[in-house]
Image 1 (cartoon, rainbow, N blue to C red):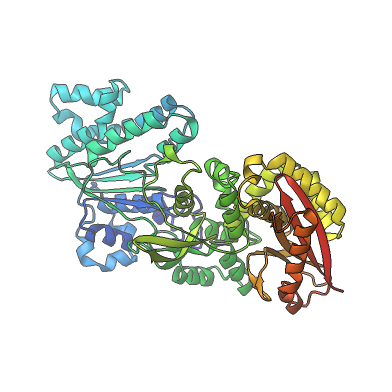
Image 2 (cartoon, rainbow, N blue to C red):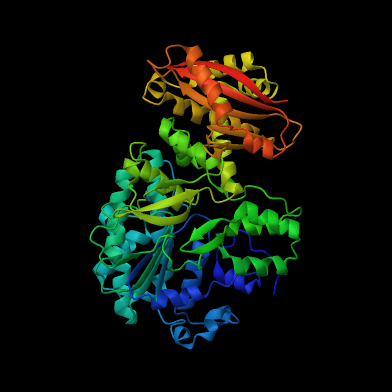
Length: 563
């Protein structure tokens, strides 16, 4: 087997003829053939092999003058005689929209029209001479980039009709990254226009079309049915939460083991690879990020880096993650310290309605885009509730970098460094002063004026403390001693101090003053023995820190819990 890694190569024919290394996903073909539904939609995160898999389907099904059976020699699918009966038997339409993400509707539609024109030119030699005059005129409108909008919206269904008529074979339609133009439309402000065009284009080709043999679509999300797939009753949506096709995208444990043997990974390299790129769950299967795994193996030093995270602007996700809604930020910080959150998920996301008013859509977008994973699922009454976590270190680096840049932008990197330095040096007066300055510049009155302002401060401070993750393990809301602390900081080097935070609002009328509330916070740390976990870790110097809040005012005091 070749050890040439095909980074960025998504053309199956070129990959096989170049004898590049290939993780055998050919049984995907069998699953497509055996699935009784006419149209399949397979949403998966970017860079998980969607384009390569559709390219493989194209070269398997497409009828050509020369046989392409040699491309499948030695692959799993070759052993399935029933499936191989379909090899080279159908006309195929293959379109990819992955590059159709321009800043204006005109530019985006231009790129889509170019894809359609290219498709028409590929089929022109086979079809054109047998068309009647009016059909040739319609054909010319596409190849010459003329015609009205309606000609372009009907372009797929018209081409399928004449292919079926002239070949006697119904058409297999493969559409890669169908939702890329829609994401661009949402980001750059032409969502409605592009949704209408895509709905008309796809509905004409896929809805009740006698010229269709099978349709397979890939993308990142299932865009809400009322937006794109209105009336498409023959659509089978199989997102990553479902067990169908769970082995077909990304690398499984078995495939990773073979990769590690083929490329002679050391135990240390394999451990790093697993920590950084493991952790996805498709159905009930553990999946590794293929793009990052291959980049890791191909690198000369085999040092883990955020390869996948760096392949996209992530603009929408960054805006959502840094939204200052207090409850949402609390959950983000919980995820960052290794905890899970529980929420329902929505498989039908309407991008135009994506706001912080419905956190369920935000969590759903993060799951289906590959930035969170579902650990488990259960029922709450009649609703499915998912336990979500960050899948691996690579994705965690995205959250940390996003929050770090946001904090640096809002409070300043020098001020942040000063705050963290004063904490580790136990300079409580300076720490309290810097914290109050940050609160005044970042948090709004609305954030801190609710019934639980201490939760807002808890989330905010937790976000600041994650910048010390190279020196401290930061935990939140865990049991220790006789209760649950708010924040615990465990030093990675035992000669450094450990910290326990307790956040309190002034609980009037029981706590009439700041002094009363501070005394309550510090007493709670001592009485409930929150320092037990640090002591068991062997930490010698431990500080309890009380943070009392009242609106946008904040006070800090400390108590030393051990020598």
